[in-house]
Length: 69
Image 1 (cartoon, one colour):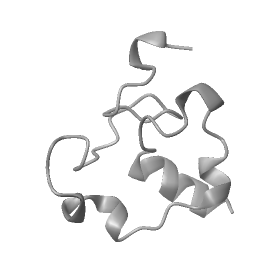
Image 2 (image 1 turned 180 degrees about the vertical axis):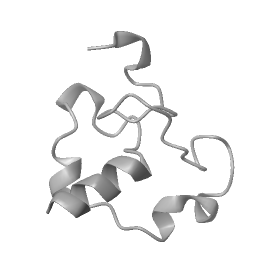
Image 3 (image 1 turned 120 degrees about the vertical axis):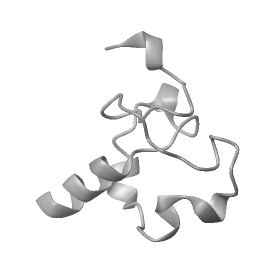
């Protein structure tokens, strides 16, 4: 696991790539991509316990999860 990105609010805790979270980047939450694409709870449950609630998953992980479901 790449520990450099652990708990970084701008990095997806699943794929370790930028999550493009508007809120974490200091912009209004309403500007975030996740306002138009719900994040499944089953996907959120895959986030390691020590990283849960510290950063958002990215749009690519959400879309891939939905495509596989």
